[in-house]
Each structure stands twice: as structure tokens, then as C-alpha cells.
Length: 345
Image 1 (cartoon, rainbow, N blue to C red):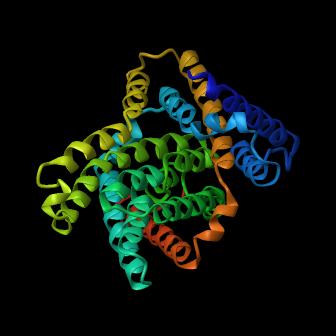
Image 2: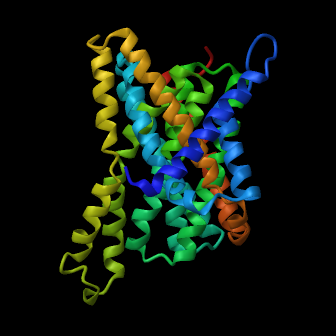
């Protein structure tokens, strides 16, 4: 652990604990309707955009995903493979079809609205695969200007944040089952923190399912990056170094770095739990620790959301991001209804 991160992580932990306390203070009909994750996100957004984040906390806040990823690994201890194995191939079909439809439609709408080609592609891969991580990997291959890369990441962050807050509420009103919502969140919401947050806001089972589905979806980053690199090859001159293999040499480490290696830890603990090799008490304790780290990560999501940055984006990228998010959601829901058999519990 780097000491520079500690103060930021402590700030996020304080917000998470405060969110938990606030959620217990509001009781309606004997229940606590306010989810701590939503409160943590909103408190983080409020602090970032009103009070400001202390300078010595910035490094830790920017590395909030490290805690979230470790939390995801620990939450694998409470996942049982039985439900996922029963519909494993069907879930894979939902992931692939939703991803391909999303990439094609978002790129098409972006070009129709005359967005630069690179920006349209960044929005498409960011929306359909793994948010800002996919954008950061693909941007150098496309030679995207820094402002277009920033616009794409900002757009994805904005609509992903909206998805965390809106999708669970809508699904609850529609009576969607936990597993189905988990598959929906894992295929329709952009980045891993957003998916995990939405899933666990809905229910524990939905959170487990959403996390597992999203980690499988993240594995598609490598073939998509390869496809983008190959499509860019004719656009580059031999003098650019592509003919000498520089892109492959430079691109491969980026893909390896971005590959969600932590998914092996998640699925390893899930395998132990599914094989009943974990004591029930130990699994519950590990899972609770994972949920706490997830909540701390949600505070980081809020603290990393600078609403002022969206003013520079303009309406077109935001519109394409919104349309793309809705298209992905509709395709995901349609495929789930067709392949998994609907959503009412």
C-alpha cells in the first residue's frame, strides 16, 4: 500500500460509514429504504463539487478502484455457481449480442450526428465493454485527441452514474427477479464499479450475479482492442511503425494491464464456496468485508465525479452517450426476455 493513498482511502471510508449511519436513520414501514451505496455516491459527488476534496486525498481517491476490486474478490466467497451454471451459455449469448449491437449502434449514431470517428468509437467501446478502462486502452490506438478521450470518459461516467441511481428503482417497480436484474446490470451498465453498485443496491443475489456477469464481459476487452488495432492498420503509414509491429508490442502490455486479473480471485473464492469448502461463518465474514470495501469504492465513484467537467463536453457526445446507454439497456432486456425467459419474480 502506498502511503500517498492512505488519506484518500480514509476519506472514502469515513463517507461510507456516514452513509451507513444515515441509511439506518431513515425507516419507512419498518424498512430502511435508502441504500448506503446511493448515499455514499451522492455524498462523494456533493463533497467533490461543493466542498472540494483535500489535496492530500486526491491520490487515494483516484485509486478507489483498487479497494473496489479487492472487495469484489472477497464477495466471491458468497457466490454459488449453481444458478449461473444452469444458464451459463444463455448469459454468454446475452453478453455477446448486447455488446455487438451496442458497438454498432453507438458508432452509427455518433457518425450520424457528425461526431469525430475516434470519439464515436471511444463512446461505443466504453459503453459496451468496461467504461473508462476500455476508452483509455483504445484511445492511443485511434490517436484520439486528449479532449475527445476526456469527453468520452466523462460521458460514460455521467450516464453510468445515472444508471446506478435509476435502474434499480425501475426494476423494483417492475418486479424484476434478483438474478435477471443481475444479468441486466452486468450487461447493460458501463464500468465495473457502476455494475457492482447497481447490483448490490438491488439485492445481494443481484450483486453477486451482476459482478460475475460483468467480469466475464470484461474479458472481451482483448479481442475488441485487437479488432480496433487491425481496423486502424490501413489508416497508418509504414513509417508509423505499425509494419514493424510496434503497435502490437506497445498495445499488448496495455491490454494485459487492463485485463481484470482479479476475476480469478473472485471465481476462486466462488468455487470454494460452491464446493462447500468454505465454512458458512467464514464465507459470511469474508462477504461482509467485501461489501464494506465495495461501499468505500462507491464513495470513490462519487468523489471522482466532477460535474463541472461535463459543461465542456457539449450536447452531441452527451446525446450519443445517452442514446447508446438506452440502446444497450433495451437490447440487454430484450435478449434476457428471449433467452432467459423474462424478468418477473
